Amino acid sequence: MGHVTNNSVSVQAVETAAGEGHNILRAYLVLGFFVVVSLWSFSVDTRYIYLSAYLWFGFIYGMALQYGRFCMASAIRDLFAVGVPRMAVGIMIAIVLFSLVAAYVMAVGKSTFHASPIGLYSVIGGLVFGVGMVFTGGCASGSLYKTGEGSIAALLVVLSLSFTQAIFVDLGGWLNQLVPAAWTASAAAKNLPASLTPTDGWYDQFTAGYIWDLPARTIGEMAQFSNPFVTAFVGNSLINSFLPAVVILALIYVRWYRRGYLRDKSIVYRGWRTELGGYWSMITASKRTAIAGLVLGVAAGLHMWVMQGLQQHFGILNAGELLKAMGHTSGLSIQDTVFDPGYFYITTQEAQGAAWVLDKLGVNEMGNIFFGLDNGLPNPILNPVLWMSFALIGGSAVMALLNNEFKLKWPSAEIATWAVFGGILMGLGARIGLGCNIGAFFATVTNGDPSGWLFGLGMTVGGFIGVKFFNWWIERKMAKEVVGLEL
Figure 1 (cartoon, rainbow, N blue to C red):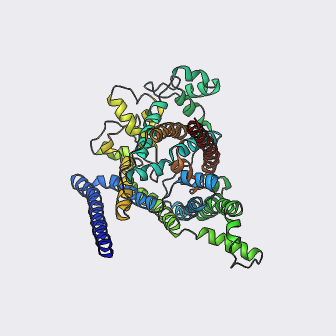
Figure 2: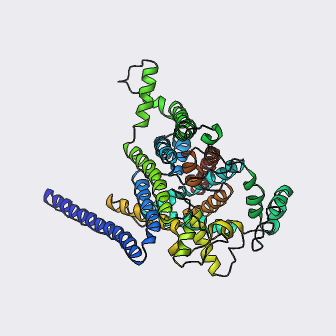
Figure 3: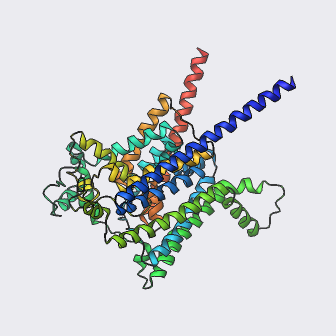
């Protein structure tokens, strides 16, 4: 009997080893694909290195996100649903580290960051986005990396989020009746090109009549420090990023971690020393998440440095100029620009991809401000920031394959419905809030922009609402199942 068991174990071990070997081969194939894309495009025209820079930083982001299971939806859900602070702590660590790198990049004049307008819209957009991401079980970046793991539900989130944005920014009709008259008047007074009709669509009036009239400055700029290093490190990093992160971590410690830590019988309570020990224990509790936060923070800062260096090398301010010089004029905006933030960003490039498809199907997506004036609709093959999103999925796939965590997962009808519905809410929230958990929160907060905390506040409240709704939904569903069993 033992002989049979040993044989079974041996066969299982061989099959496991073979599976791991296949996954390693698949990982190398995915990596090889992106290497080939970079080398081939560079051989065609050396200026494609600009797109490849986005690609490889996206690849790094994907690997780090998957390795640390880094997802803001998980952070909020874990806190409010089960009281686990690991992911929220990891995000705060990443914010602190990114802010330090971003501060240096900004101080030496290599930053590509532009502050977002400060207004209530950030809270509202974040709230809608927060509800949606809890429904889907993944934020914008989380849905991308989970797609790389083989999750079809995550892919549905990405698609619904993308097409919702593309449709939402072009809507008019009865929605225009909800627009304040002051927005309409302000938008009309902007004297925009005739091909753009800012009073025909509600989002154009929201953008030109409201958003453009709001102040947009970092904390360092508000403080008016004369020294660029003081502006970056004291104003943007210390005041806007580090201190708020420390306070949030303290709140997390008191509310969700302290009680469990003090239950350890080996700990002798010695007042503030014990509390500081517990605080530090919480921060270092998950090395994997902390490592992911370190990689994300450093890579995101270096990303800005590299993109600024490439812009200076090619003598451009926007990738649209580069594409035009290479003979790719189709899809450029009125100003010959395309979406090119120069740093880690999600959602806008996915909206471009969806709008490009709709445009090819006969929908005029270039008649609005969002696409027509600034972001353009370049062919996805030539969209530099979309290269980053595709590579993020690829980087996640490589890490998942190397860790034997890749698996093609088809959702049930119920999960697919939640994925699509939540993705729609995330798309609406992203456009109202001018970004997602990355572009409107992570990248803004770490670069000294207080609007990021407003979006984060809304996102947290929305996540709390989403968790409470899900708890109610599950209890209601279970009650119906119990009644069905009794009958």
